[in-house]
Amino acid sequence: MTPGYLDKKNLCGVVVIYNPDESITANISTYIDQLSHLYVMDNSEQVDNDLITKICAVSDKISYHAFGENKGIATALNEGCKLGVNHGYGWILTMDQDSYFDSAEFFESVVDIDYEATAIVAASYNDLHFKPAPSSFAGLLQIGFVITSGNVLNLSAWLALGGFMDKLFIDEVDNEFCIRAGLNGYKILTTEKIFLKHHLGEDVVVNHFITGKKRKVSKHSPLRVYYVLRNNLYIWRKFAFSAPVFVVNRVRNMLTQVFKIFVYFPDKGKYLKVMLKAIKHAFTGRYGKFTD
Image (tube, rainbow, N blue to C red; front, side, top):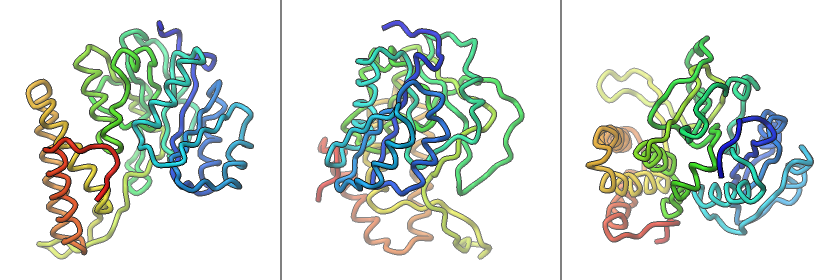
């Protein structure tokens, strides 16, 4: 497959959902008009049929696909990409259920790129819990890593790279794919102007451990921390020599997260338990969905 010009006729989309609420319909409405088709991939164990009916009613360009179980973000994205390839599309928009665009400008800004050499064109985003002032510049910058939500992905690159890594299940799926893309000579581009609204965990207010002043820190559940640590350990071992700068940055980021957990969060015992399991599973090759 050779990537054609990135326009609506050649662009489909995939949104991965898991027990969504009704905001999903409004979120989809912000980008469905820019796509020729949208694949809704449902990881929910229990399907809300009334909500699915509302989702499909947003547009006749939507097709719904239920797994009947949680297959993880990587597998769901891969299945959506396979559908896109099978239906002849060259590009696919990948979205989380709680992300949405505040402007259609993003789709208009993806011009004058080297289509064959570009793996991803990503929208810059505002975390819904932290809102920096947007830049007024609407150009594209080449960077190393992007999150999977708000990406226009080159399906030729996806095929060449072997897709997303299913065994990671969730967390670091985006970073692992981006590393491989970069090592194989693909470009990853992002807008400097902010177009996407996206959740990055839950912010909680805590007292700084030294000054006592109020501050916000991002909090993840113990299960999410398990995936973050286990998959980071996988990436550190896999790319220690081929992408050392990235690995050092991820080690630093992980240590910061662990520090915050043991300084600020309750249930430290639960976090410690899952982190020890994450280390054990990483070094014994136990990946996929977490099981006790």
